[in-house]
Length: 129
Image (tube, rainbow, N blue to C red):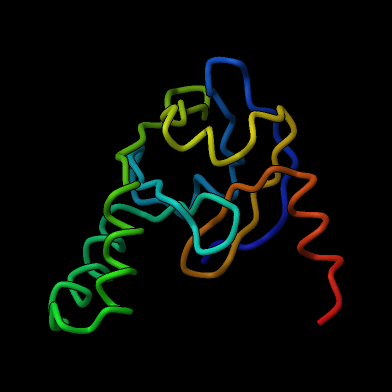
């Protein structure tokens, strides 16, 4: 299970260090990174991603809301490899969603983790419910 909040830096080349507690919940050195439902990126263990997304494939093509979810999740999905130092490169198409600030926050969300621009994360957690 992914949990916790971690402050990390994004380099100009799109490299980021994945915290050990997050890496420990991945079943290997490859994970899926895609657009999140808010202004963030969402990371999934590869095998969990395949199980979860298989249910999206069973919905009718006439259900617009489900098709919109499929488009968002699959169009932005990338396999990302973690190197021996626990770092990975976020694809350029996804780093643009983070507004290129170097300060990032990685948060555990139970079944996945999210990567946020730190300023946007602070605005999100401090907004009134």
